[in-house]
Length: 116
Ligand SMILES: [Zn+2]
Image (cartoon, rainbow, N blue to C red; front, side, top):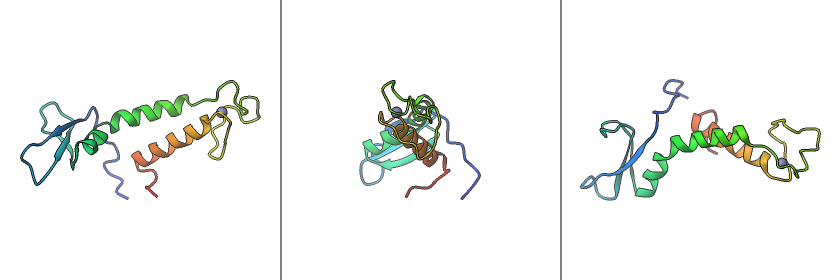
């Protein structure tokens, strides 16, 4: 894996339709206001908007992971592993599952793991 360029282009990113480009529904994802800095060119508005939302989603995932905690009625709250972040930990409220899902998505986005 290329270890250079491990930091993504800073957000926010914006999706912009490119009229009369190529042979279809071509969109561009920019990060600069002058539209001179292109992150990606792709097909389809939905794809462009999803890519453009990536920096915000990554930040939200990090925040959700940081605050993932069990509800008061979770079986884990009274258990011996409360506040631990073990990869195999499960609980009745789903907070540990949320934590692992966030951690996996963050690791994918940051290149720590590859897509299956
Ligand atoms: Zn829980």
